Length: 255
Ligand code: ADP
Ligand code: MG
Image (tube, rainbow, N blue to C red; front, top):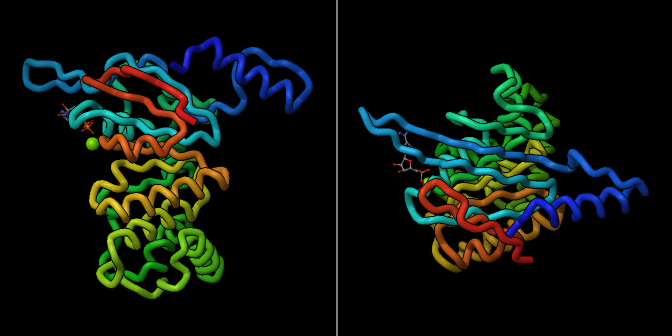
């Protein structure tokens, strides 16, 4: 369990180590803080609670898996974390900023710059090369051609696809397509990499290769939140939150 006391102690020690001064309250490293989050859908006369009173925090540099059966609320939670949707009740802070207070422009900036999304079905542009797919977020950000070319190349090299940059999605394997999608998610150096069932469309061997890539990206300092319904995938992460019927059932550090 990630109980509050040991969590505070952990931060206390972190702060003491880095600054020589204990600081007890707000953790400077807290990237995500969800407090009593509810998401309720009105279905005719019935209310469907997709999330019920969910609270947790994620620090910079964590590698977290959210696991639960189909329909347990994982994607709903991911969409909230990624600021693609807003909760019915409760507070969500990202980097110490209350998301419900943000303007549309601020939200758009967070989605473009702070969060890298990876999906089960890759969501690549079919007629564009790997390089162009990875450049897209930089085009939206208004970056000049030479610079974005260099950044996209770097991102593709970091996923070991430096030799496939001119290939289109149908000229790549499933694992390679997912690596292009991961490069695209990373190209803006986001604070968080969010992956919803990233291995769901891949065979076992390829899934493990993608999980090795996530491990490498985590070791390089990226914060990763991964949603899955498969235990052998979740076990690769360093912390596992189990969700069932929209509630957190377990929250454990595993590494
Ligand atoms: P998971 O990703 O774990 O499979 P979801 O987060 O997609 O689960 O869904 C959680 C619950 O919320 C499910 O019962 C689903 O039917 C319901 N749900 C999700 N999105 C909507 C929506 N837009 N309208 C109504 N119900 C929804
Ligand atoms: Mg889902």
